[in-house]
Amino acid sequence: MSEVRLAAEQRTEFGKGAARRTRRAGKIPAVLYGHGSDPQHLALPALEFARVVREHGHNAVLTLALDGGSELALTKTVTTHPIKNYIEHVDLLLVQRGEKVTVDVPVVVNGEAASGTLVNQDLTTIQVEAEALHIPEQIEVSIEGAASGTQIHASDLTLPSGVTLVTDGDALVVAVNDAPTAAQLEGEESAEPAEATEES
Image 1 (cartoon, one colour):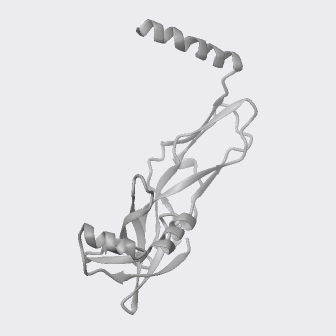
Image 2 (cartoon, rainbow, N blue to C red):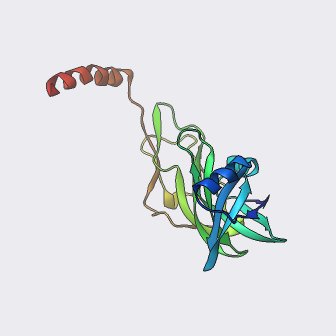
Image 3 (cartoon, rainbow, N blue to C red):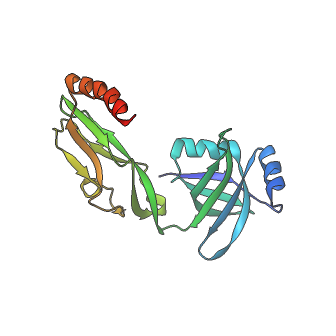
């Protein structure tokens, strides 16, 4: 996971009105906390931060240029407006080089399972512990040629060196099952009206 540099500035005004003014100025209200230090109220450049999340995900390590110095931070929480879909607020976690952090990492399934099968992905992310500057962008798992009945659990995933699984190793990530036949699908469809009639 690469570091991304962002210019940040201290916020001196607080409350909903101040937050709206910050957003009108093209910035996002943010709070930086961690390591027992007092929370710092910041403003981040909105377009640049949105691009970082889009291109690198929430686990990108941010190098915040602040008051002539710099701080390393991970994105902890992004609050998005439920209707207009813009970022309203960000919580950032202060980290240090060499420090281990626990994060959720996406699981990406690659390959094609055997013909006549249906692939179900039960977990789209797993939780791992990794050094802050070496968080994997994603964990890949291959199902190429996997037969029906194949099950891949969290403990079966191959993790990069230095990365430790936090998610329960028995947790099911991917299951390969027999695909339903056309006759079975037709049977399910014809059964639905009958069930509805019985309930009424």
